[in-house]
Image 1 (cartoon, rainbow, N blue to C red):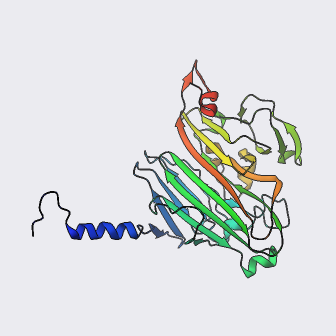
Image 2 (tube, one colour):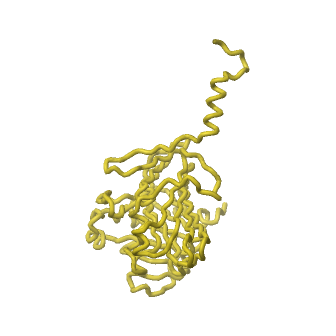
Image 3 (cartoon, one colour):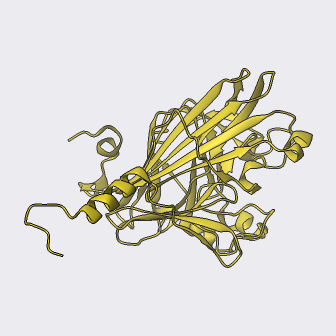
Length: 329
């Protein structure tokens, strides 16, 4: 049957209507270890992979298919172990600052797809996913507080956005610490500098959490680092000289920033990290650690993080960090 020029085939019209009404299904696969994995894609060719285990982003590639997140060569992909790399969620405790297991239990629990992420608006299922973790009877034994932890992960051109929300579903207030641990892939840690944290106070975990003030104009690396920078700006730049690439970390609701690299001795002591892995990674985390977040019953906290990449430009042989951080021209 022929359709007149300019007229829309009613079958095509019906299909379009159905697609409008029914969002396209998530692209979910099961990897070799049986862990459900959600593949997000963007029209530019960038992609991200998210596990239901830990609600963890384990891959983020740009339009040239270059991996932007670090994954340990010895990462353990078997529950209940945490996976070293990508973007683990640290909740309800960061590090060993409490009685729970290190970095809390959210990163080694199986999350679910969140079918009701309101009040956030609906999204495109090809480039975004909503996940939820609710307290279980088992969790209540170790941390007797009822909660809902939600995470929206959205991929767009050169950008990966994570919106975290914690709701108190208990009948009494509770407090928690929180972090998104960003394992960034770098060419050579000794060629990396971080801008935006100069003159700030930090707690040095290698010196029993003693408080210091950052003296350097830019942070560079020649040994182990494990610091919590306090009252940090909403924008931090991680400049990779060798790749001529800059990560820009924007955040809101998470005032602290954690910087971590184990260097050679610590890397060799970590069973799930290759001896040379430290050279190609740097953790710069969005966090709320120094002052725990307190929620009354039915209150909700929201934290926003956006990771993007820009090409680093040179000015008199030096990168101009002000241009990256403040958009100076």
